[in-house]
Length: 129
Ligand code: 9YT
Image (cartoon, rainbow, N blue to C red):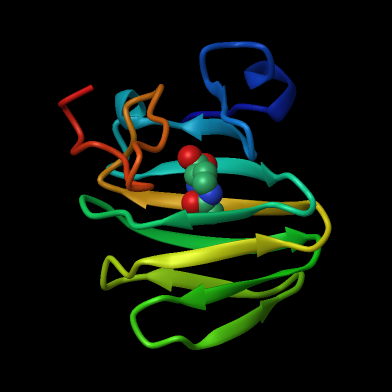
């Protein structure tokens, strides 16, 4: 069994940031579960265009307010605490944070650790970082 607390991750290599987000990676590939699990903060007022070409991702909002636009079909969904979205089709999407969003993110395959978005808003295939 793995027991881990957020404060053990903060300030370590499991805490990865870019200009718009701060991802606290509680579970990674090395933990051997087949998925990674992140407690992620999205900065208020930012919009991030992404497409995870090599992963599926589930995102569950626990704090904040924003929206997601599916750029494949234009559909916009409000995000409030209790909202889940799952990118089961590698959809290109735009995530907008009206206030700071706190999101629980699950990736399959698991991220290995230090992935950040490339210019296309994607992460490399697992094993190539
Ligand atoms: C929701 C989302 O994909 N945000 C970007 C950061 C990413 N989820 C991560 O690595 O935690």
